[in-house]
Length: 143
Image (cartoon, rainbow, N blue to C red; front, side):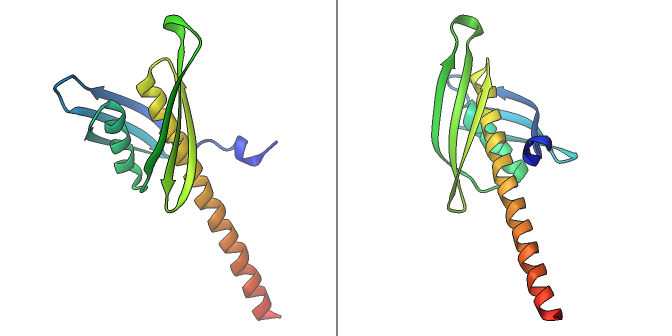
């Protein structure tokens, strides 16, 4: 079994609430588990999804640019699920995320959290590679 699949996600969506209307500015409140810590933030946006993304980005501090957003229905009728597929640019690299829920705003939030976990994992792998390279360098110096 892949070690990555066994580990819990670093970021987890704990709670969200959005307020939006035809002539109102969309506002979102988000609680996000970041490792063992729960962080909360609120933000405005040009719609409920943008407001949630702004709040999540405030919590994580990750600099992400949304470059693709796709919404597809999975199933039919009121029980249909909305699947959101997103791609973001983060420091010149592209990361993909998927979210699935009956509520498309929740699907969107889950997709962003999925992306953030992918970014976090990539950073952890990079740190591990740097540690290994440093250890190799240190071992060469002691020989």
